[in-house]
Image 1: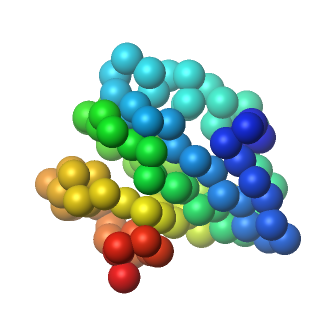
Image 2: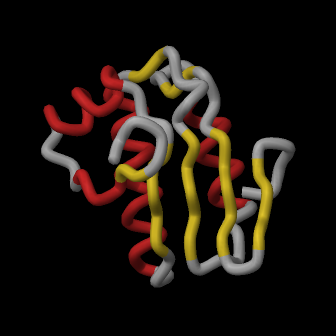
Length: 104
């Protein structure tokens, strides 16, 4: 995920998620992730910018979680808004992903 929205520090990488994770735009982010997976033990996905989020965004997060798990990488969502938290709970996704911001 090497792009302008990524920063790497020692063995972790911070990735800013785009403002929109909907059916209309997750494909571009998915391709970027496929082609540029960071070499880190931990990836922090910063959700602060997300304003539009739908089932396609949920599917993207699930794919990222599975990919990270297979590569023994810790994936953590940070700065998660209440609306994104609600969507994650609706799909019964693991809350241990959530750290930082107002998630503690």
